[in-house]
Image 1 (tube, rainbow, N blue to C red):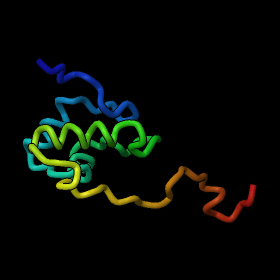
Image 2 (image 1 turned 120 degrees about the vertical axis):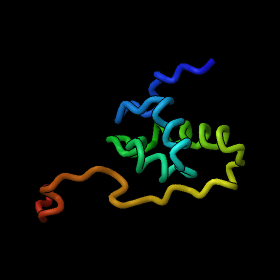
Image 3 (image 1 turned 180 degrees about the vertical axis):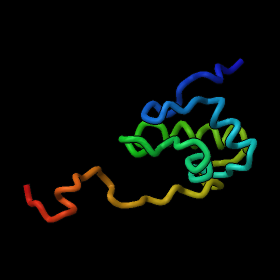
Image 4 (image 1 turned 90 degrees about the vertical axis):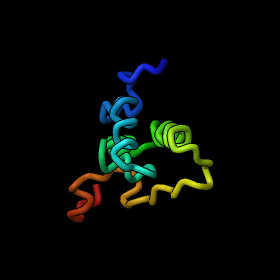
Length: 90
């Protein structure tokens, strides 16, 4: 039996139960889960949870990795300060 309270995305505190509900509600890829739960939108930008979410999707939808549409990268790839955006070189 699965622990639906298990945290999958630590940054946004998204549980396995929330991800399973997102899939039940129509999520068919990582982007769909992200839009419904915010999994992968925290400070690590999915580096610690994206593979877990993909694995859950594959298992629940009975898909292979090749069947899932990859989550597109969205710049900035790493966090930057507002000062850098405003032209401050420090």
